Amino acid sequence: MFHPIKLIVFGGGVINKQEHLLWRIKKVLDKKMTLFKTPVLTLAKHGENNALYGGVGLFLAERI
Image 1 (cartoon, rainbow, N blue to C red):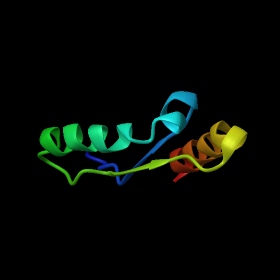
Image 2 (image 1 turned 90 degrees about the vertical axis):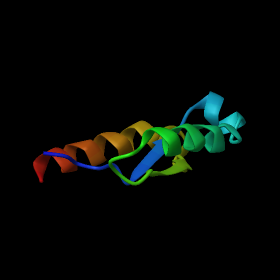
Image 3 (image 1 turned 180 degrees about the vertical axis):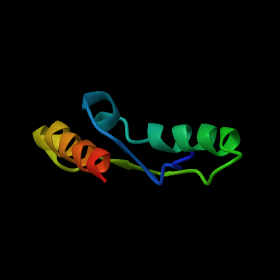
């Protein structure tokens, strides 16, 4: 069973200081993604709570 990814959220000091890397990552994904649509790439917006929100999201996804 396949679960295509619709969104990839990047967080952390390196990517937050170099947002221009997102378009480079998207360019590579556009070439490599042949079976599914390329996911949306975005930066995390919850500061120090990124891991908390990500953990809750993963927990909820596993329960569904």
